[in-house]
Length: 279
Image (cartoon, rainbow, N blue to C red; front, top):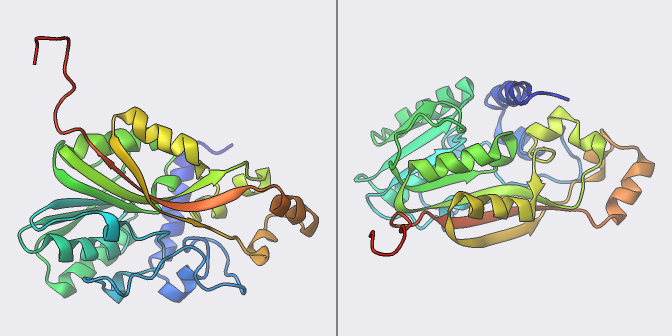
């Protein structure tokens, strides 16, 4: 079994390649990383083009939701985007936060950072910056952000609990997040779980939905809400790269579900009170 570092290096390498591809190639695969499907064009990604601030040069078709649409971003907010890619969500967030706000994109793939910075330079945004770094150890001071967003990224990270703790750390008291991710209901076949392409494709790295929500609550977040949920259907022509035709049948009949969810939660506005009389 691959170590956490090996998994991260595999994802970094594959997303380095993805950064050089066009949207059509990426959107026809599992979050851009899997092989192309002849049955569908958009396997997971939602259409961003109707959102204010959308920039087609920054849209690689890699997401599985529209977290910035649900993120309740206000003028002047500081927003952090985890796994910012070519900058798509950052530029939509910048439209909401305005010139008085600040948007920080974090990504651990150098090619993505380079592409995002080039896009920001073309748009002449002085308040959108991109930092190369691991979201398990964010290059951001504690209490920096009013809002954290992320689109189909946490399922790529082995240390999901550490990422949640980092989100809690970088948010201001009373701050909140809106994150889109892939979750499961049921058990994936071992051949899919073991496939590096399906990990980088946001499938085999996903965890059970209830475990995902419990992780958020256990970190200390409150007001947890599922803002959007949709079923993800993996076409047979993709599954046939990992399963035989005979294995696909019981997989389809198992009731196993793959879902894209957008989750909202808040960091408490004040520290928890100690015993009576101390506050």
